[in-house]
Length: 241
Image (tube, rainbow, N blue to C red; front, side):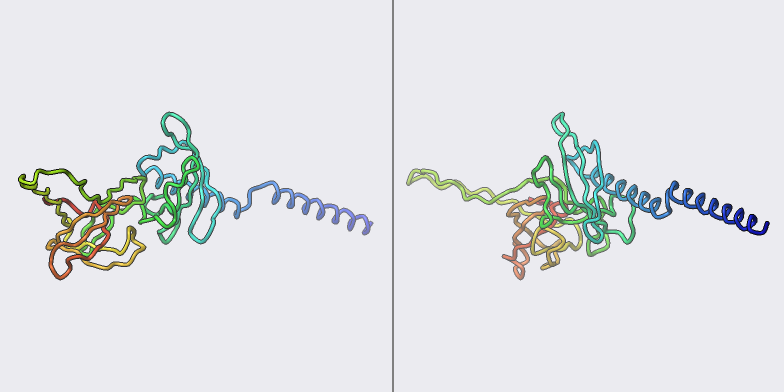
């Protein structure tokens, strides 16, 4: 009789163990739930960043893997000229924790239809978030957007003039001035380049070129800084004459 009781007890314990295993394997583990929530937050943040960039109408977005610390790749399709255009990119988290806000994500790379639009060495700053100048005021963001406007210097073409005709006066070159009380002048087109000058209202600038929203300027005044070339985010500079 006692052997029968031990046998029944063993059957019950075995059945409970099988039920427990089936329960654990059939449900979603807490780790999987956490991974799904993280993936959803990353997707929403990258989508917000892309929606904030000009020229990219996202149709579908599929996040990839975490390629390195704080960076995720992504791919999808965007609307372009009435058709779906594939894109691929890498986004970097710039906040202390993963969030869905566009200002917490920075575009590191973007390829559209097989063409590189923004490369890692061309990245300027995080999108959307207002930046502060040295005087504490806010200014336009330094975004890694899709603009590709470039202005180059060209010497005027020679013209044939009569020996007795007086030469026409050359048009005065535009003069530029920073809009903030203090603005940083950098060694290159991006916030990754070091600050080489602090520009104020007394500075007068001559613009040499534009590169993806960054302006290349030569300092005209004051005399102590004349001739120095610096880069400033173009939205922080305005033409005064």
